[in-house]
Image (cartoon, rainbow, N blue to C red; front, side, top):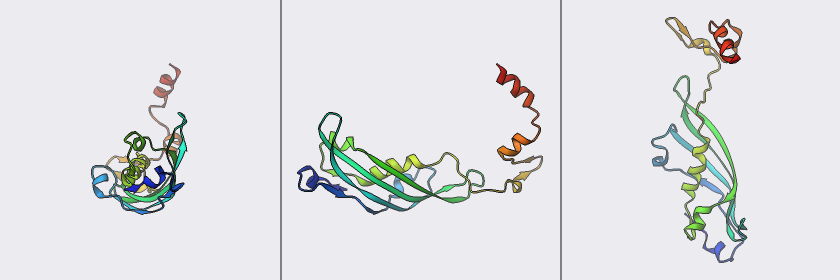
Length: 158
């Protein structure tokens, strides 16, 4: 938790939230993320006038780190580095009229948006084949004669 009371009492103009944070495993236990490492934050919380001309808590920060997720093709765990740029008001803090910022919840809300739907580090698809099938790239699909290409052309005309 980050104490914002000095900021709210105008004792300080900003609160530095820079540092390294560890996201507890409970946060990502039921997600595709297997592990979160090296979560670093560079930033600050300030008071800024919102659209209603009221002073509100405003965060300017960069969140970087690395998540371990399953490869979309091999299902092996792979490293996926990420960076999040955030600069916006924190409305939930003001609505509750609290002097605390749950930094872990804030970080998690922004990190979870960075989880890719598909990610692979496989560059050679030729090793993925079986009895009567093989995995091909998008480029190969466009180059090769597709038996459904005539049907696709008819569908595109409609």
